[in-house]
Amino acid sequence: MTDWTRRDFMKAAGGTALASTLAAHPAAAVPSERVRHAVIGTGNQGQNHAEGFSRFPDCEVVAVCDVDPARRAEAAKALPNAARVEQFEDFRALLERKDIDSVSIATPDHWHTWVALAALKAGKHVYVEKPCSHNVREGEALVKAAAQSGKCVQHGTQGRSGKGIQDAVRFLREGNLGAVRAAKAINHQLREPIGREPDSDPPAGVNYDLWLGPAPKRPFSKNRWHYNWHWFWAYGGGDLVNDGIHQVDQARWGLGVGLPNAVSASSAQLFYRDDHETPDTQLLTFEYDQCHLIYEMRLWTDYPMEGHDNGVVFYGDKGILEIGRAGCSVTFIGQPKKKIGEGTDFAANIRNFLDCVKAGTPEKLNAPITEGHISATLCHLGNIASRVGRRLTFDAKTMACVSDDEANKLLGREYRSGYELPVV
Image 1: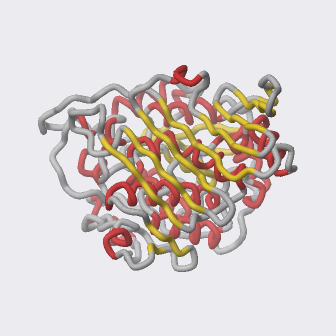
Image 2: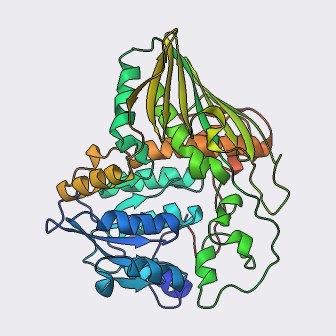
Image 3: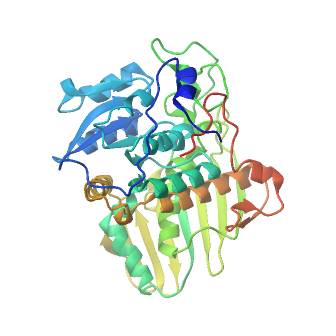
């Protein structure tokens, strides 16, 4: 990593730079009771952020940013204050606005930590979509920077703000299911093949070089563009870090565990015969002292196949507890299933973030970056085990795989010249 200076940005961005002042004091309440928010990355989830934040009367979305002019215009147009929303191509110019209190980051994954570090350096509070990092080393850097800044950094694992899931986790922690020795995080859904697309020119007006950013230089392709970038290692990590991270996070939360002792994997492309790099089928086992966390992914079956949507099943001495988007339920041995709560709540995660920004209380975040980093690390380790094809022993103290240079190399990445990870 290298120090990030205005001169570096002037060279890398052709004149656009970010004021690099980092607040050295703990986070304080914003000057007014209304949070001025900006959204960076305006794809599907970014537009959800823009609309979601704007629904709260004590928050105004004042700026949006995307390298695709059509997408940023669409996001701005949908807002109630559309005429006053400033649009940016380069997030670094947006961060120079002193009147912006907080930002959402909904870019492709390979930009998540990079933009979050830049935002913290500019003195902003951050809501970063999952996964918070493209690799383990980025997550470590972001956790450290968040602690130093004193700002609120909320992770996009919004299930942690869902009251039903909170109640279900409390139910487990109180011992109502007996000893729980295993949990299965299930991601089963149908994601259609993407086919094959040749390299081509990027769409008119798109700053494709900025989109690539820290990733290696490569020609444009429609299959490595909007949303499909998830399926390429340079930009994403497949559906494990895209959707499965929600289930991994909730399983880990319910079990009350952190980083694993070991990870084993079996993964393959059993369905896709196209440009995908990431697997469509994945089975992971995260080993802990007293329990196992199992992740099961298949992208060629639809949600109703097992009677519930993506979710988590906890296996206890007295029965099972299930968490899903449709809600939470418990089934004791010999008794019928009983619903005990609702599922995830995106709006509640935003509300919790705004409350903490206004009060200057990052310690009260429901999905703090410290927890987001651990769940993202599990996903990264699962992908690394899949790619190297063997069981990994993990040392949480050194944050490295034991005696495995090949695996450890994948804990970080090389950055394109001019886009080295900022140091905060």
